[in-house]
Image (cartoon, rainbow, N blue to C red; front, side):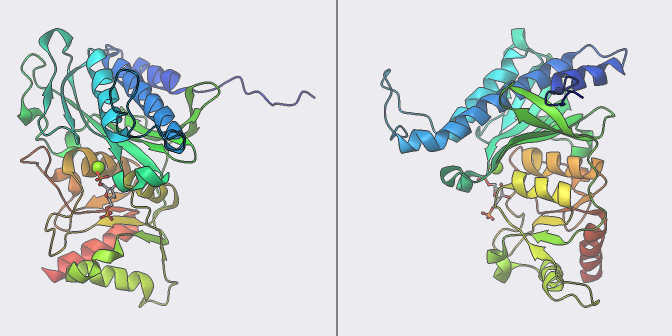
Length: 337
Ligand code: AHM
Ligand code: MG
């Protein structure tokens, strides 16, 4: 008997995406190439995030390097890495990043059919204390790659052709949905520098036992949100109270919701009638993944993926998670109208 210490049949993300591509004889491999560049960006940011604590310990942060440049902040660095990766893929014509006020139009000689909307490093309040942070992205198809226009991204989330996130946590995990393959999770094997399929075909539990929200905003909530959270703590139907988990990094909170079930919400409140999270590169990609995994995403008014954005940095309230849990919140909003 030979001990099976080395698996030799690893499903890397590259192999997985190539397999997917081969199901579509007409596919030209553009999305495969673009996804390879997403992966490259994620690996780079993962390595930078892992060194960030050390850089601070050694007093590097804020210091000037040999060229006399200041060390770049992690979020600025991550944005540069992804922008360059997307442009150099030759498969994008327009980019929308949380870090850039205006959309970036790729120069004509480097244009391709795809548009990427992304938040290069989400969870800014968690960066300096080493808590999980992440990258979120969504991919749209342009109508005409030679004439990309803002209208190409001011599209409802249900028009996304792919979406995913990468979590820089105790391990580096990339969750992705493209084509017909469902939602799949890959974990970076640092010794190989490859993402390996570790969570095939993720399905969110139909009902959860966890709620996730910033309760510090409770005094400004509307009645349905307040009632929902009250019911989580003091259930009226004899069931056990739910557990509260809130990291404050959307990627980490949504990742846990996807795997364990439950509800994650960033509701509207009196001070922020549209909540906090950004529609294009936070609410849409996450809602798309949750729906594809069998859950639901709701705004308080409608299905999140039906919303049509008017501006690229628009915000929207969101309630997403297990199918049954979102049914509950939908009922509360329906009866309040
Ligand atoms: P950011 O883009 O400035 O990082 O803000 C987005 C983050 C999300 O990751 C998280 O869900 C939310 O803000 C937490 O907000 P709050 O601190 O108000 O609870
Ligand atoms: Mg963000």
